Length: 159
Image (cartoon, rainbow, N blue to C red; front, side, top):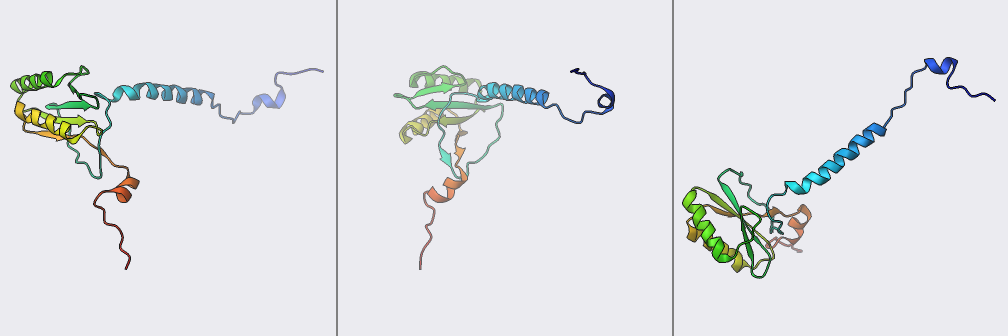
């Protein structure tokens, strides 16, 4: 019994099979890169945003700052960083920010589990500091939920 490495006609034929191993390797490397980088792209403190059917989209600009209020007792305030502040520190930081840049627009990123009065208090503090353009950040409600569970949605009548 003799074994040959390749002979005669087999040598001259082209191989038409595609080697997918390098393709799979590259895809796995890209997947790993995206899995590592994606959490880093989220800016600021993670909160559960309130949902609305049709949130207004305003362009983010250089003069826009984000105020984050997370769900805690008492709520912690974050202003352009990851250091939590108390209410008094937060008021002073906003007043200093307004003195440096009065044209700054503020957006409030508040956790949906907060009580309405706590978010209203944050808005009052920003207005007292002097800021005129203050908004709220919300996320779009999923399509299935918008039609079925929207408050104020008219129920079909049966006549």
